[in-house]
Image (cartoon, rainbow, N blue to C red; front, side, top):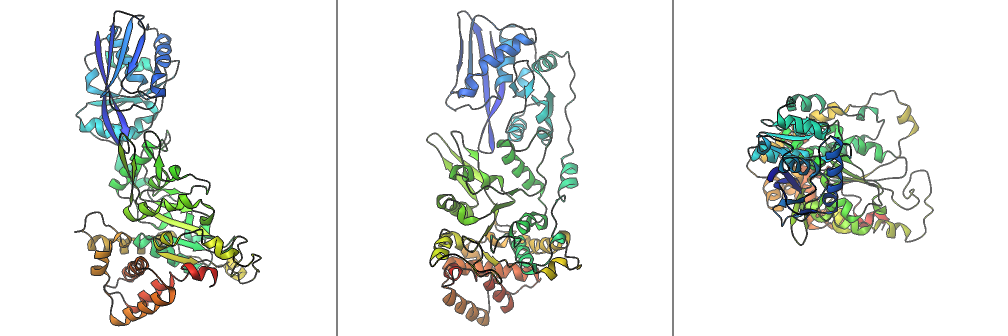
Length: 513
């Protein structure tokens, strides 16, 4: 007999339908075809043992399993469950009339229990798109799939439950999830808050500007000045995720297997902080079937690179294109996969190897030329893509012990949201632009007009700091954000002056030349 079950393969952040055809006939041996990888090929042993464990038999005749379309490579262990059910139907041990109404995915343990799989949300979206009634999957993944409405999500604990459900012997109620309630109840929960930060008012101001306009920031200062502490609090002042943003972010984390068994929806902006030993592929994504890297896992959130000069230069340079285009395109011989990568880059670094160059109290022990070599590890093109350069100085004892209550993240976030609302209205007729930092050069000219006094001030700064044309655009974008925070339609001279201040650490100045 011939049976068909239906599953999905995940490529990038999207899923594509896969038909699992099983034929049981005369002959011997087990054949698994359709470009399976090693994990799929090994499913024979898992499937056979699981089938025997729940009291059924594995056919001792010729069994052919075809994963169609056969020219697309299949990866992972999630095909175990549809293969097992297909074998039981083809060998007439399972009789059901509803098999073609469900997408079925799941990894089998040897005793027939089901283990969680990756990429559930894209598969659920594809199942609804293709008109399937429901999705049979491991119970641990059910909450994630239930985000998709108008789809019966059937979470099963083991192979036997799946068999009895298809036969009609077991009733399993579809899991229903109130996506909006989950989303709105958790989107403002952050552990770190700016109210706990004493002093550093200039850094808080810079991060507020960065959050309001979606700008990239680099903080330079000695060890213990608070760079990492401040960076970790940045997500708490960013505007809350919208529901479409949350779904898009959840898809990426689902594909990467980063959601966990209890999570259903990513409701807070991601904060990713990879170690400086990270490889190029781990940062941008890669693999035989490409998986998202750290910059895609930071989509709609923050990517924090601590001790920036310690990262390999090749790793830093691969970020240049994603920072401009806000996406990553990974090309392979058979396919090209695109991952979104609209993130805010927050970087921190010491000013020199010992960390105390330009320190107000401690002396730098680095030799001549060492500081310059250390800072030159970061290329000019990468620095040009970072809008705000901020010098972090140590907090004095008086500031640390002051009883003065600092401004909370919620208060700062209100101003950020107001500025973002202004930008939303400004760019409502421009597709794909939501914040000032995303403006291309032609729109910068329209939206960032300045008067003669401002032009003269900016011209002097460009000549003195030897800034590039890209840095010129960055200054105008930051000035536009400062004006939005001040609820000013025009970019005033003081807005330009403050924006220029945030380029003062540019290149040659860092080494004190």
